[in-house]
Length: 405
Image 1 (cartoon, rainbow, N blue to C red):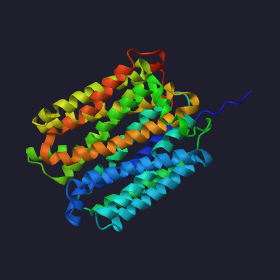
Image 2 (cartoon, rainbow, N blue to C red; image 1 turned 90 degrees about the vertical axis):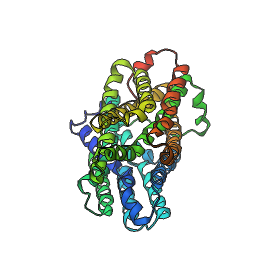
Image 3 (tube, one colour; image 1 turned 45 degrees about the horizontal axis):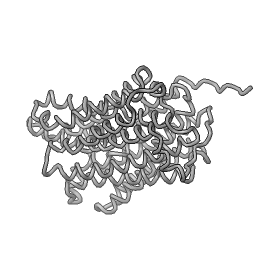
Image 4 (tube, helix red, strand yellow; image 1 turned 60 degrees about the vertical axis):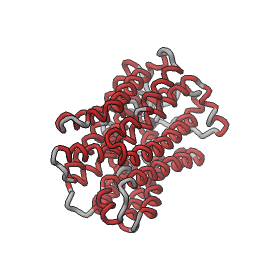
């Protein structure tokens, strides 16, 4: 009889959540200091979108490299996480203290994005190893940490507005270092699932599975909106503050932290609700509500700041609430031996979508202003349409908990 693995300590999940929160602080750090980069390097405001897109493209390259080489299965996941966090912290420091213009900055941001493939997905893998049962709730918390961690540089910038922008970058690198050390101390987890390797012949064959196809299409629509919203948040918040006579960079940064960090509530609640009503319903409602926010967002911008900022936070909450559920549905839809392949191709295409949407929306701001929300709307609305078309009604599998990252 196989021995039952010991239950993890009650401190493991909080520690992993904190580690993920600290580790992904590198993701949006360039946008947190963008006004300073514009002043020091003579950048165009639209270049902010390119800096985030470079991270997205780097992440795509990194996830594919991890999938092809299977590094997180060959080596200890916690050690892979540590090395990735260290390299990401180093690339981030080079971005701050070595880069002198956009070209070098894009390269360092690309490298940082590639290292995130050893932090974000590998962190999910460790979660699954510790919590093979009830992993949906754990992943909801983990994605909530992703939102708060992504927003951390804006909080640091808001609290240290008088410090050089390089100090904000260096602080994020320090947090990444601490994240790697913390995960190394936590370890790999007692449960050792069968390695999920990338099968080239199945990379596109999984799209023949209706339930997988529905989940993937919903995820692509979700991806078009979520990162565009977060990248546009500084411009949306700054515009609202300016209309109310509050143009301080400090308040812009704190407002953006509230919008992005506040989305963590959606991820946590979405994970809990999925255990009661199913992942499909959570995803469908989230897409519908966030799509509606996209459509009415230009009119919301005319409201007083006291109403507009909370509504921006609510929009961000619904935009993230479904994020973990696509991994749940796709994991359940794929044959067990192809789950790794299905999730890899889904995430890679999804982040490719984000790179395009960020460029489109960020560059359109100059012409459309708050009406840029209409460019985000096709993502969630089309994602919902195609998802509903593929799955006409819920199935028993929809009620299951997420099984992967």
